[in-house]
Length: 414
Figure (cartoon, rainbow, N blue to C red):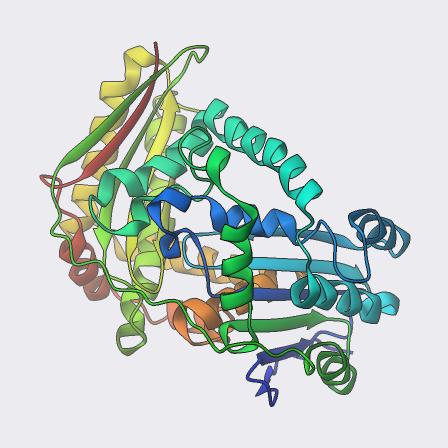
């Protein structure tokens, strides 16, 4: 049987929007529940609270202890996790098709009936602080965390997702995250995505069975788009115990706008092109770095495109010059037709291949629904990428890339 690619989207009577994308030739089912709440929605003194709450949903419900959750997921071979981002928090499970209903049962119980036990709350503070230390000890993670800080001076996009151990995480109280849970974890502020080896009738049946009794105030976070003017800004961080310097350069973009979908599509193509170009120029031709990279992050209220690499301290200036030069070339329209076609083809293939991933696909669908109001965006992306032209590249890159006004992050050995 071929892959079924038609998505079914509907809403329960309690306001929960959901989608079903059957792929019955696969062996697993993925379920993702996205919440429209992330680090941009926090009070600065409670920065990291969304991520703290994410951890606590695995710590017990009205009918399951944390051990019962762990034991059941192990019994049914369920792969489970969650992540907090700037504007969303997403919980997901992947399971062999025979046990799809068990995953619905456990995940819905966590979402609807978490009790956030006081003992577990205090115990979990330690793992959360240690997770933040892992990010602090890993220069690549730090790079991702600090790019938005360098770009945004006033918008809450600048706040780190994990918070600050000494300033905020130590002081967050159970009542702080309970307030978030009781207010924003409601059906009208969520999206449920199901993908994989499950037919539409069963997916709908399980969604109704396990989520239709969920009701709470219909609160949605209040947000505002960033309108900060680009400016040149640098963050230099010296850290003991590292040998490599990591440099990142970023440019602010507008928030996602469905009325100009080709801006989103084109900037994804530009990031893919830069990723390949920097790999060739920095690693293959000059041997200056192991991991040159570029990426485009689009959110509902802000966005940015960034590139960077890790290198020996003595080579940092050379790497910075190459990155800036490649950004400048793109802004000046210096991309060949052949390079553009190769980039588009490769990116389209990557997106199509990802549709077989029953974890990543429902996550992408839930995120697209909450961030952009379009659960099918990622599924249609490859067809839109094929239409991106050199004129699109020139127009959208010159709109945002100004090498006289860029944000720079440098992580260097002390």
